[in-house]
Image 1 (cartoon, rainbow, N blue to C red):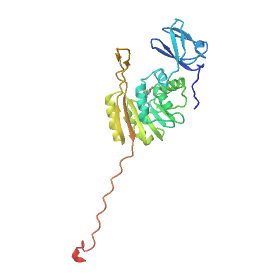
Image 2 (image 1 turned 180 degrees about the vertical axis):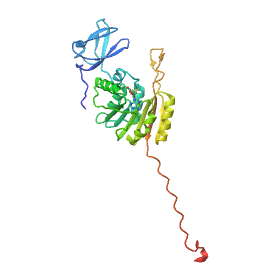
Image 3 (image 1 turned 30 degrees about the vertical axis):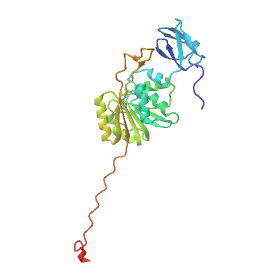
Image 4 (image 1 turned 90 degrees about the vertical axis):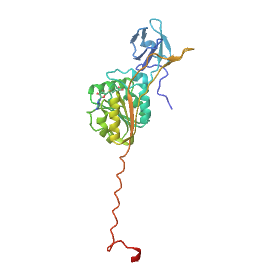
Length: 283
Ligand SMILES: C[S@@+](CC[C@H](N)C(=O)[O-])C[C@H]1O[C@@H](n2cnc3c(N)ncnc32)[C@H](O)[C@@H]1O
């Protein structure tokens, strides 16, 4: 399969400038521009045409590695005006929703468009992402953040809470404060056995959501929290890092199943023959 990745850095591409202290900057290459950091500046013209992974020296004589950004680098560097989903949670949810090339997925609450990028990459090629938000400014922000990451196929749509959703979906993801209010339209839009997933900030909300899912006939309802602890692996003194992200989101997943079949009506009692029930003596 032919790779879509370039061998050398081209104008218009984003590069992850990585400094020796671990700080990173996601920078789009434009001829004639200069990027300044706390460890000196770098001219874009010195970067364009270099191989990915090269290390150059800033105006302060400090090394700057030119790294090809991953999807998660682009997600974490979006221009944020909302909370965003974190990679540890995103990876789990994509696996839980079983997203793959060709899947059709809805997102309710695009926010800054960080999760939107992950959904779009997961269903490409041939899939579809429809991303709804009730605020036009967030649709615009998410569209811009996706475009900066090279993602232009997402169908962004304005919508009020409880408005109907596009039907025929394999999966639906929500990152909104009141997902339980959307259960009916989510159920309507999902294909049979379609997967639902949510990021949800508090235990109270997770509880309300689980009750609503149960009430609307979903199965395999599960809520998890993923804790990620960084280990500083160093000769003879390996230990966990002092700091850790304590809380991001609780993650709820479920699957749409058909309502249980109606119980069979009781067979009507056979009509008694005239003259009453025959006895062996009658024969
Ligand atoms: C926390 S942000 C989503 C962040 C996003 N997951 C990301 O990774 O960037 C929540 C978004 O949901 C939107 N929202 C809240 N309730 C909604 C609803 N019922 N329908 C559509 N959008 C909604 C808000 O306007 C906001 O943009």
